[in-house]
Length: 87
Picture 1: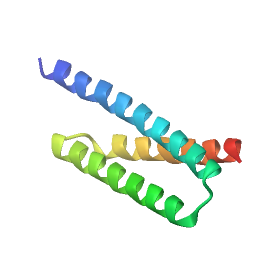
Picture 2: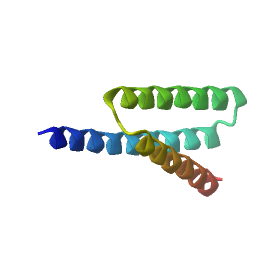
Picture 3: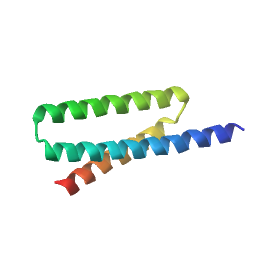
């Protein structure tokens, strides 16, 4: 019964990561249209605060630190590749 609960957590984590990636692509498109430094700064600051909050909640639930760092690396690589593609 415990593995079923853990599998549900990982499924929700995968959806959360996908959602963050879509939010990042929306931010990149927004930044490419409105090229204002203040908006860029506030957008990325808000995103980083949101990511930190989600990861702190995952640590409280008991998700392995190794898995969290793997997701962070995937998110950063997606950001870099997405930014290069847009610009």
